[in-house]
Length: 243
Image 1 (spheres, rainbow, N blue to C red):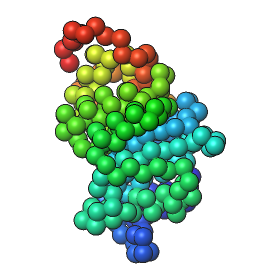
Image 2 (image 1 turned 90 degrees about the vertical axis):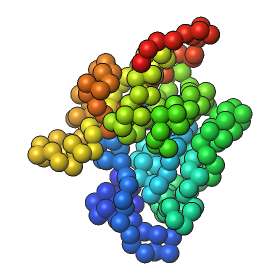
Image 3 (image 1 turned 180 degrees about the horizontal axis):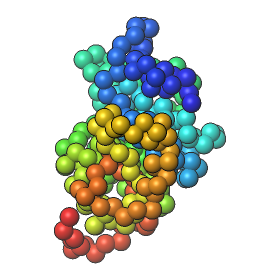
Image 4 (image 1 turned 120 degrees about the vertical axis):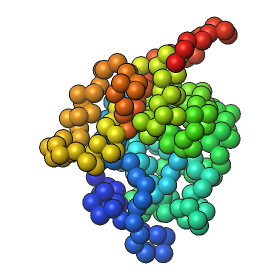
C-alpha cells in the first residue's frame, strides 16, 4: 500500500500543502478501497475517471491499482478542490506526495462540463468512480455522461449508494441499462459499528463473497455499488422500465 494512503487510513490525518497535519473528515472505507482495487485489477485498467476528489483517499486507491503503462491516466474532476473553504488542494497534494502526479489529469470544472469535454476528446475509460454531488439528478447525469466514455466491459462504482438518491440511480441502472451488478461494499455505519472484528480486518473476503450476486436495491444496501457495462446503449427511443 502506498505510504501516503496508509498514513491516512491508520491515523485518520493528512497534511496540507504547507505541511500542517489536519483531520480527514470525509473518506471512503478500506472495504470500498478493496472493491475499487479488485475491479481495477480484474480489468487491468489503464484509464480511469473519478468525480469528486476531496482529500484524495479514493484516488490513491485507484492510482495504486492502475496498470502502469505509458498510456496510464487518471482523470480527476472536482470544481471545489482548490477552494480554501473546501479542500485547499490537499487531495492533489496527496496524489503528488504519493508519486502519482505524472498520471493525473485534474479538471477543475463541474462534472457535467468535464465529462462532456472528455467525450469530445474521445477519451475511453476502463473504470469510473462517481462520488460527486449526491442529489438524484446530478448523480444520474454523472452516470449518463460516464457511460458515454466507459468502454464495454468497463466498470463504474457509485459511492454512497445507501443514500436514497444514489440508490435510486442504481435501481435505474439495473432496470434500464445494459449493466450487470458485480459487487458492493457494506455501509460505512456498519463498518464503524460492527462487532465482527474479523470481517473488518479482512475486507477482501467480504467483497469476494459479494461478487456475482443480483442487485437487490433497498433490500440490501451497499456503501458503494459496482456495475459492469455489458453493451452500448441499444434501447428503443421509447424504452422505459419502472425503477
